[in-house]
Image: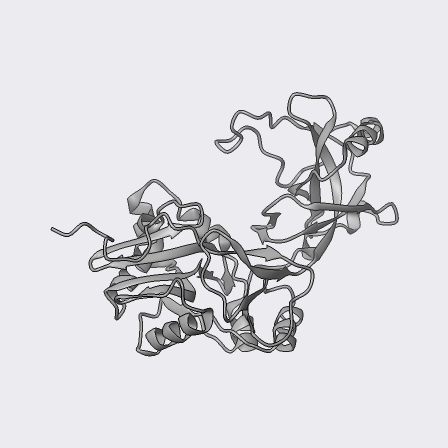
Length: 351
């Protein structure tokens, strides 16, 4: 019996090519531009009946997305390696939270979610089709092969990411998406695929929000301020914890202690509050100190999931001119809207 995946040009442990953040998109001949999708990066491998989906970190994803495994199995090619992004349309949004919910140990729950809220994969590159390895072929040819593969008719869960070679159009995609797009990726059309290298360029939107400082945490093992806990008010006047910011110099952290100590008091988080210890804390202290909601800070952020900043934010400046009650949840950009993006990009998310 043949060993699975031995007929493929690359092992399952191959990391995807990545992008380096830039402030402006490059322009000129030889570039192509694609939307930056907000999902799980995924390399799909198929060798006959053997199929696996691999994450950017090298962990298998196939058991969590059986509907995508089934779609790859139904594709018109028995040997392939394709690169893309797992996305999940839910209630007229591309929901990152729904993707995260799939990473669950119970097979029964995964099967139910796959039926009720099926995922899709947005393909943008291919490294092998049939017996032809494409790793060392230029992007223009790899894209040509991918387009021909998709044009042959594939399951509706497999989508082809749009592209343009017009830098001005790519900028309009970003500017006119109203914050719906996460960014634009620029790729050289003559470039070979470089696994694990930041050989592409990405430009992301600069999004900002004014937040109430509702508390702080100390540095691990120390007494200096490690991070500020951020809050936003809902329409009912409740303050919800939405994330943190921690980008301070050593001198800045020392000054923060003097600024925050006089404000220590009862917690103002009467909506969602900062959590306690969790399985993600890895033994680190999650204790926090509550502050009266008097300080406002402007932060930069990238993505939002379930009305929270998905990652740490970037401290920009204090806002003494802004009243805390003006810091509301409606500042946060919503998750990606398939209907809006389909119109803007000329693509579709459902067959």
